[in-house]
Image 1: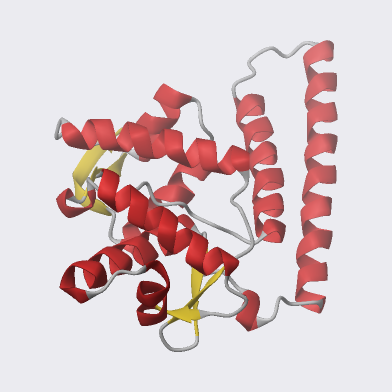
Image 2: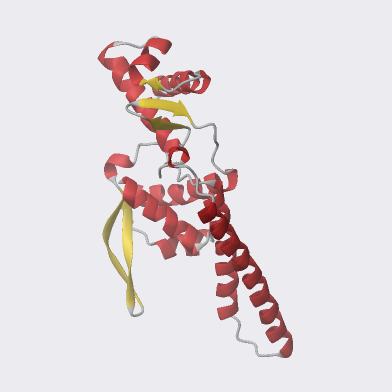
Length: 225
């Protein structure tokens, strides 16, 4: 494990300090690793850096530093979700998105988005369904061959992340409204105020999405998930 960590640091520094994208063979030469052992160690380190969002592949087999860092809050939330999933999977105890939401307090949509990302990347597997009222929810486990990998980070463009965060806050407000049973004048006035706040938030989202359509991000700068 220490050897793998040392290789990761060397590869990270090689990519980070280079003024151009590098091939894996060039990285091996730069850090002094050769042979089959060096080939595998560098490949694994590059793969981990790409998963973490620290490096990205450009062109054919070249890698460069992204010069970006994940949002600290999003990073911590994803780490918390992954840790919950990992512990349950270690015990072979399937889980649902709602279960994570109820036990961690993290927004349901945030968990579902991360779970979808993990499914697409092959880190998560559906292992059945759990009946809940008249519907059923998918049960998940982390894929056994992914249990020992570094926790995968879902990266997004800042613009998308900001919009999702705003919509998440509107969802939380809406959920709170449905839980209100009191019909007093004070309660109704508070609900009206909450509704107005939600409208302002969604209007901000609408403007942000419209602006992004007018000025799309160039394809070469998009980060894959």
